[in-house]
Length: 353
Ligand SMILES: *Cc1c(COP(=O)(O)O)cnc(C)c1O
Image (tube, rainbow, N blue to C red):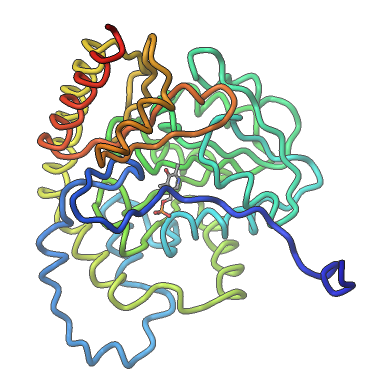
């Protein structure tokens, strides 16, 4: 090993789901929305000339639009380049203790990566056998708590009593609730931000708003938390929010009718798909998200994953303890899900005989 190699910050990076290049595939592996963003987003034909200017460093129009949408003040909103950026900034800002931060053992697989990157000690807390978080696991002294609600990749939503329970036992640290999927069926902790000044609620445009390609995420919480995270962000890179993100982000959040319609479509498809999964011999926790976490009673998940891939249907498979017999299947259009069901039916039939 060369001496200078000792001076390199070494990390094991997060591995995102595949983004295959072929056009004729059914892509159900990264929880993208199958529908396009609001036509109002696509209709924002701001003069490209504006791109020669630096964007507004405080992204005021977007912050105000988000605050207005949620009925909170602009001092309670932080915006970032996707919720990954918001979460990475939050780890850097809020998890600065010698004590370990706590998060579930089965959860969004970026949390341990950020913790490692920033040298934040952490402890994972095992979900119970029904894949639920156990509130009492989060009672011990810690340096902060983070969990998604609904959780990923299980899709299971915890109710507000659970969130309150965790908050009541963690008044001295920051508690982050990652609500990437909340629009599809979770109960939001947003109503608690005035009551708990140590609560940060994180959202994204990537799933329910069909704008994963635009990279917009945000956090909501007490103005003191928002100031703290902004101070860190401006010490890092002032111009993170691009001009197109700002104007398109505003256009999206202002079109609530379209938003609600698309979310309802995904939820209806999910409910149909869940019944089909049951018919085909799968079990799954009831999903509050835009994906289902399914396991077949006889056929191993890995086999189904590989066969589906051959048939150009991409779903997500995690080769990890406790979940290596599950598939995380994003909800696509009705037509895509029908094709998947037909594939599963035929594939499983070849197994039974
Ligand atoms: C998708 C996802 C994110 C990241 O979303 P972006 O806004 O696209 O960065 C964060 N947390 C969870 C739990 C997610 O599933």
